[in-house]
Image 1: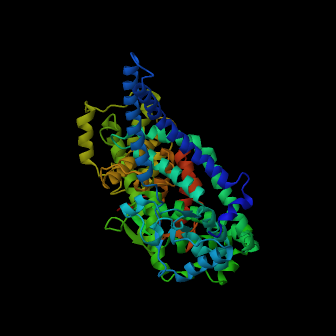
Image 2 (image 1 turned 45 degrees about the vertical axis):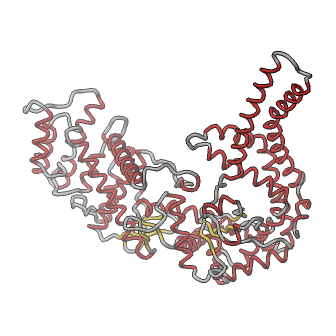
Length: 603
């Protein structure tokens, strides 16, 4: 077949020789499985001809035959599992030729120019990468994972393209980037390489099958064989990649160097878009419906801010690669939903609790809702710490509440939360908490909580002044800030567990185990506390100072004042959370005209 000879063009050692090394591992494993049977045949033949007459050869022959039958049975089961197990398939958005005739035409033209077989189909993935994927395994046809020409026996692999490339790259750049990928169909058609790849993928699938009940013993020999052929398989793939790259040298080589810069830029913009913009929406039960279009805005913003990226936006006047699609908006929505599933673990389909959001509605439906949800969680945690489990005695609460009623507004906000701070500070220093004349702490605390407003301070609702007062001087180990951070972590973990169990109790395996690629590690308690205090400040600014929620393509949710982003809030919040010093934040709030004593609207 055309293109097969290219595997010898650049592979040192060649891809074919490494493929034969992988197949030798398979042959040796087969020989080991057949060895007891061969020994049993020799012993039976010797007993039949009389060469091994008498004892103990009869018992030895019987034992060897039993061992040989057992080994053959287990070997047969193992071989059947390796042959029939379904290899992992990357979740993608299939792209039919009717949906992208120009893109199929471009790929076929590339294959003709490099004299290699064209890919059997094209699919999109919400990632900044492109590769070839074999979906012609019989198990894929049985399970319905693959259908059409891509699943036929001996079919060429499927070309998987990163969807951000289609929206950010121009048509010529996409063709240059795809050339070495499409060239890989030539080596993939070689019988030895295809056989070696099938063996390795079968072993990998057998390891997954070994996690099922009753088949656990299969995983151990599968892992052993994978270790034995791991080096040769990796070198085989390197040889195939080198051969494909060498074959693609004559196709847009100069443009490919420039296009590789766009690959790195697209990866940076895509990562920022997912972690800063999409992730907050996913956590709120919404998924941005046009992530690929958003990456263009993010990269354009990056080009505007970063002088190193100057000139990249001048490319935007050329024809974008998404013009090769018949309905780019529909494809963008499908890849955006898949991205939410892969990177966050969201449902596979939209629903009442998992609905799309347009970019124009993002500030109101995601940013504002996110801030108010976090502000509500913060005040719920404060209420829990100020309740019977948080207060050691009621006198401090009663005294503080009384002082709050007679003090000035500024003083009231600072004095009222002292009811929560005092017991925590007393516990941290080792001194006993003050006790009031009421005697027992528990019942008196309940009576006090019934007699005061829900927020146990001098204001008729959740206020920013309450948060400032509680965190003032509340830094350090064992202080209220530490307790509040721990409470927020526990509450958020409980909410995430509840959301996870709503998807069903079954344990997912393989591609169904989502999220496959979590975007961020778990946040620390201090980070969560800082985020929640920031949300509370933003809610107060929106409600009393005329600010508005906004969207920054690179940084996600932002606070807009008179249409301009305020990026100076974070260090002042950290000063309060980490050092217990509210003065920088109070000065910022005063300059903005935020009324800290005014209750904020929560969800």
